Length: 159
Image (cartoon, rainbow, N blue to C red; front, side, top):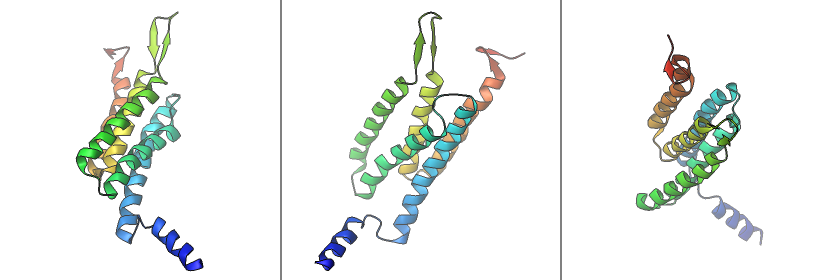
């Protein structure tokens, strides 16, 4: 009976069969967490609701949603449907960050929602093994979040 239990446990944990696959999985999920954390840190420094943990979880979750089917041999056409689901689901998460204030006729949280959406896209890139694209996208998103507000005040260029 012990042999059966051990064989079953080994079979259940066989999705990381060797050091190469373990390294690949750690790299993709770890990079997703790191890049999401970078964007989340910037948002947290600005006092926004979605901070480091939220962005890290969104990026890792998106990476995991595409990584697991890819490692399982799912065709890219089918993975594209998984990505469509991620985009839709993150849209609902982002909607929760948007607040319309009737008394002020203003909307708040759009940048946070867009940032969470971008973070999911970066996570997808990591999960698909597009690490350089994910890194470049993170740097560009960080530039938009951190640098543009310094150049523009209230929608107009600073003088």
